[in-house]
Length: 171
Image (cartoon, rainbow, N blue to C red; front, side, top):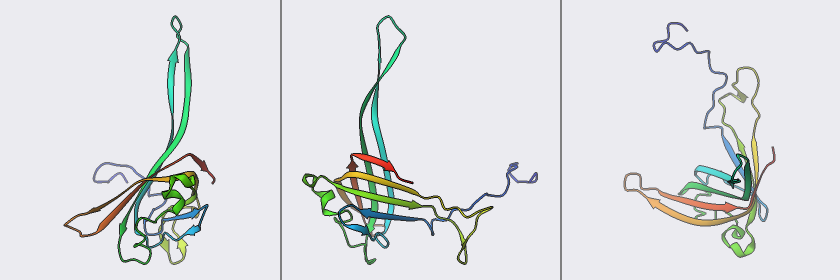
């Protein structure tokens, strides 16, 4: 390692991640499992936060916290295309998520990291990595939907933004 062209002394990678094997599954509280394979999902993000305000007392250095209400928001970007499930524009989420008067919907989302494979075996340094992240979003409502098309690639991109009332980490 001492002969690295940039002078780094770094050991071999502990594991190699591959986007080919990464998976995301979505289950709806009102509609069972949603088949998102071939929906051409390109990106997904979720943020859950609550506001925290500091207050102080005159004549004291004492700090007090005021806890705000939690709220979650997220977005999902995908390509609308000819893949089997990619034409479900406007209906990626269940009907309950599009109509706020229905109270939104609950989604269980499981994220599985991508790893390289050799045949049917995962390639890792010492053990198979089986970590997954499972989230439960409650009261999920779609707040906006948008479409984009660019002349260079002539693909229709859809972006959904949503909010939710609570988030649980279930695994």
